[in-house]
Image 1 (cartoon, rainbow, N blue to C red):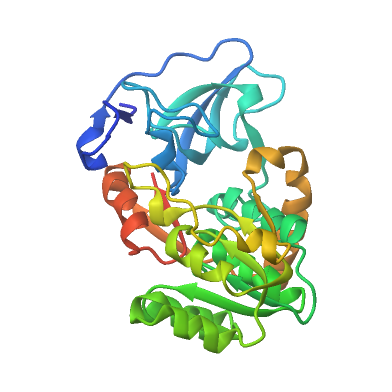
Image 2 (image 1 turned 135 degrees about the vertical axis):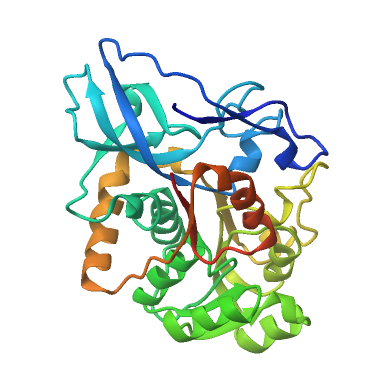
Length: 330
């Protein structure tokens, strides 16, 4: 039987593990303009925390009783759409389930000859696109600049630092723990690595940015953003991609105390989501796929097996146990 994971109620102050409800519900036959998809891979993303809170966000919250939203790839097993054939591979917000029926306009075809299907959830998926547009389009890294990326070993950050290096920047990555820092240092060969878990974060940042910071790509918000604001050079740029340090908080998001630096140093600070760039996805696919094929871009994945592992995977995101893009093989 097809299986689903639904959100039974908004978590509020309780652990999210308590609100996941497993079901085995049948799937209807596709109607005109619909396709039936067997889901093979699902992406576990920090943004999920915002989808299960009943407060304003960039997407409508998942409602109690609904299948939990997730970005996935799968194979079309039946089609009543002129745009898709049986055997096509597709990606989209397919939900936490093993099978589903979807309107064709909600899906995008992918090419499994270009890369294995799961890559379209990591480096050639939304995390790769987010890194690309945030770093290249908004950040505009230049040769010789000092560029700092937080959560630099994560799915988005690890691609962002590589793009910054290719642009000729002096790239500093911030991560938590020796294993993640070693990956940044030894595999991605960054110019400097900061372990925020080792203490004295301000001293580490100051030592590795003696001439200040020209571009900061922020994935975490909170205290690290506040600290980096004090290191920004005149007319520096800050790209606000996320705030994972505060996603699990039930209180209002804390703003930076050093916001006045935007004025005193003429800084540009801009946030974004991928909905700003949907029409330009082919551009990102072209650049990222060429880099991956040539070996100039590395996409790191952390894979768990089975839909049953979703509650554990979700918690891994927020306690830092995953290394790279977190995926589940359904």
